[in-house]
Amino acid sequence: MRRELWKGNEAIAEAAIRAGCRFYFGYPITPQSEIPEYMAAHLPERGGVFPQAESEISAINMVYGAAGAGARVMTSSSSPGVSLKQEGISFIVGAELPAVIVNVMRSGPGLGGIQPAQGDYFQATRGGGNGDYHHLVLAPNSIQEAVDLMQLAFELADKYRNPVMILADGMIGQMMEPVEWKKAEITEARVYPEWATTGRGGRENHRIVNSLYIESEIMEAHVHHLFSKYKAMEENEVLYEESGIEDAEVVLVAYGVPARIADKAVELLKEEGIKAGLFRPITLWPYPKKRLNDIASLDHVKNFVVVELSMGQMLEDVQLSVNGKKPVHFHGRPGGAIPSPGEVKDAVKKFIGRES
Amino acid sequence: MSKIVYTRSKGLTDVETHYCPGCTHGIIHKLVAETMVELDIVEDTIGVCPVGCSVFAYKYFACDMQEAAHGRAPAVATGIKRVHPDKPVFTYQGDGDLVSIGMGEIIHAAARGEKITVIFVNNAIYGMTGGQMAPTTLVGQKTTTSPFGRDAALTGNPIRMCEMIATLDGAAFVERVTVTDSKSLLRAKRAIKRAFELQQQNAGFTFVEVLSTCPTNWGINPRQALTWLNENMIPVYPLGNFKDVKVDKA
Ligand SMILES: Cc1ncc(C[n+]2csc(CCOP(=O)(O)OP(=O)(O)O)c2C)c(N)n1
Ligand code: SF4
Image (cartoon, rainbow over all chains, first blue to last red; front, side):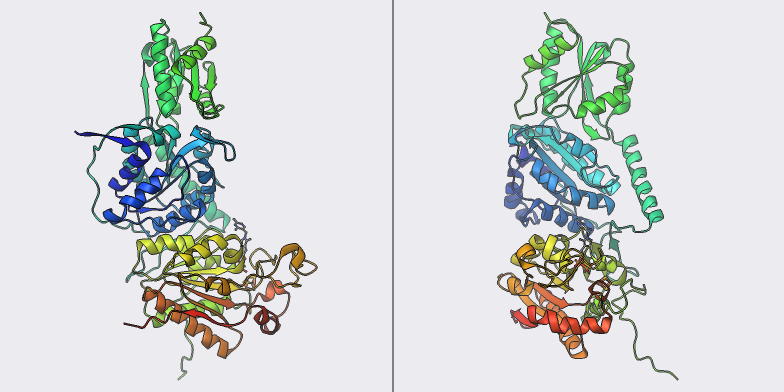
């Protein structure tokens, strides 16, 4: 298959179009503005539409309307903009609508910086809006994986009638890498789901898209229904990648591009005779808790080191998964600066008492 | 044999509404429903209801309905209309919803010329949450958050939406009406119908502001509420047409 050089944000937009997304709503923000720019340039020729929204709030509510009307639909933004979308995401979850939200993270809090960061992990995985809910969170570590996960994201959104977030760091958005388009573009007109508000057209009953359940028993039943979906996601949709676990004494845990830095650090550690392995969650929600707990039970695994572009957010999921079986250490850089593999290697050596 | 002189519009469901006695929300529902029936679009239309007293309107209108977050109905309607450009789409919003929290969404939907119809129910107060001040509350009007009467120096002056929206090129039809007597009702009905017709002709954004009562939170009876509206609201919110692009029917 032919490999082409693509910039991350543009590849994400193209992958969405190839996945059959014909409706995109967004608002410019660095480092993801190439997504709306690409959509503006290419959606019309592919039969789609992108009316630029006046804010991220408006964009996510356009997504709600379009998803409720039956369309395959997406929005994208970066950290401050994704904060503004949280009310809308909560409504999309409550109304059980499928949609894809891309967050190309920058550093924060506040306006923060425009350099890559992973500080939105809590917001993404804990349900950043109001109420009791979850949505799938997929974290690519390369542009190829971002492209591959895009189609999966739309499929999972439809399967569960629940939004799916692609959580990428700014590097994924900005760097260029070779991409292979593995799947054929979906060009057939979408068959509208049987719950979508498409106009009654002779149907006996009107359809309603709604997240309001004013009676407590019905509200409770609704949330239990949502949680039955989350349970199914936990059982069926967990994705991760691992290497060198079989004889590792220390396991590095990282996601996104930092996992590539950690991978390099593992190599450097091995060169120095330290048996290191890498565990990389691809779904951040549901988190690969079970597998990580199993790894923690291995006798030869003595330590975990979590590497993040934050002050330690995924760290908490690793701690919950390892559940006290082994020490969990943390090395992170929150301000948009990216640690070098050598820096990570040195940190790991310090944590495991192998400073030379 | 008895003669049926009144039946519920086919544009409404059989569900009993929750509106307070004497509230004009119900009348406005009826006008929208009758319009859909007369234009034969109940089967095509997709409506969007807001957060406010009309939050349950999705149960009452017989067409497909979506319930939107507070203030965001025009954005939700935009999403729907872009997916189904051939279907009539309307929002039904209160003044807290549309003028306060949703000001951005309504102005930009109008500016984009979204081919939707907005039914804007202005009762100069937040009904659902128990009678707090709205951006449309009159200067001097007492509400639970302006207990001494709205003080313009503290909280500004009422906002006139029709006048503002009429300045936007995307707007095709803008009219302010009320429903306090049979004459004004007829006029309101005509405006709502005209708005939907122009939407069907793809003329642009269509907007009907209906001055409405909230006897419960105004603290007066329904009859007094009609008088209060006529005497106090109309001078601040003059009735009339502010724009009609007059596209001819094909
Ligand atoms: C984000 C958000 N803020 C506040 C509220 C609470 N709230 C519900 S309805 C409402 C105001 C409704 O007033 P209006 O739009 O004038 O409609 P009415 O009830 O008078 O018909 C408010 C503030 C909410 N539901 N969501
Ligand atoms: S609170 Fe006011 S606006 Fe709401 S239903 Fe009652 S009278 Fe009508």
